[in-house]
Length: 237
Image 1 (cartoon, rainbow, N blue to C red):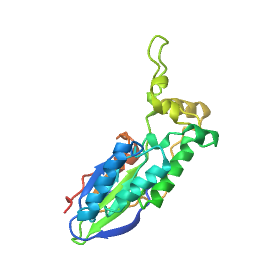
Image 2 (cartoon, rainbow, N blue to C red; image 1 turned 45 degrees about the horizontal axis):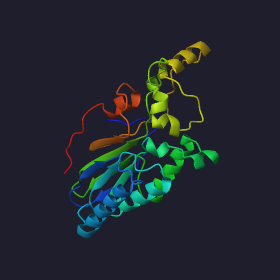
Image 3 (tube, one colour; image 1 turned 180 degrees about the horizontal axis):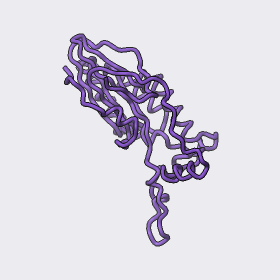
């Protein structure tokens, strides 16, 4: 059967009555007043008519760089959708000056944002949902970031991507960065370029598989080859 990446961890299946629709959204940026007001109107409409209670919402990042705003927005969305899935975007990993003074890094901000999402009732791990008709869908949030090859050194007369890209200024990493090629060469020099272990037993899924990620993932990676090995056999009800 089809398999997920070894690191995937399934949560207990949820049962949704009747038909299930899957919606997707990103870049709602509720730190802007107009965007927050629009979200409030959407939630008010959804709460009044109850039309999304049997549906699933995928939120692919860039809700806000403020953890409290992320929790507020996801809590609001969870109040009208049956299930809300979330994966952080680049804005969620921005570190403000106050956070930097407190020693927070983007890796720590990632953990902080996920904690806020969980408090809001959003899901961040692979989860299988079923309808009472017997159909199922497995939602797989994928955490990702830019490919290292985007870190390019430009000539002095050309524009400096580091200066013009806000992510380069607002993200604070506490580990060395480099391209995949650089790391592969480094492993060969150290004589440690060995075949990785097989890892834990792979887990199978049934029904439709949907992955959600802020960034495109490389189809050549082992995880993506496993996820896309064959198409789902059934459409959603």
